[in-house]
Length: 160
Image: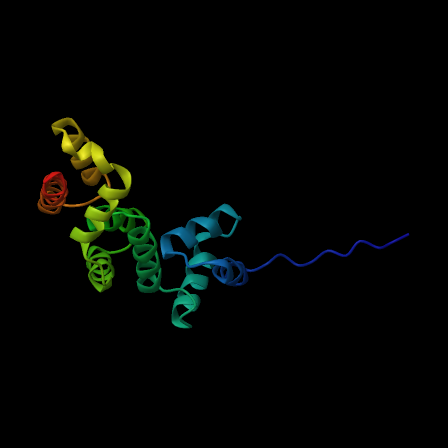
């Protein structure tokens, strides 16, 4: 008969390391994960402090990672900053993360419209739908106006 061996429970620090080995987490997100796994708040805070001091966990690095990923998916700066705020990232850090992106937001919006709407931008209803789409994606109003006008101008030039 085989003897059952029990492993000692993992510390909050070790669970934090395990989680961070897979991907970046914000401090808020990591705190929630540790609490869900039954670690008390004092132990979780001590683990988070140690992980941050050793640079295993960094809100700045998390913010840059999330901003790069969302920009690549076609989201605008306002939406990215809003999502970072929801993850507990400070406003200044979220602003710095979106500013650090080497992103031409107007070009990104135009490319997104071209891929998504194509010829339907010729009609007023199509332009209105496209503008609403860009606003939901987190682009500011000036960028949306510029992108929809650019697409309209290119369509008119193509008709000549």
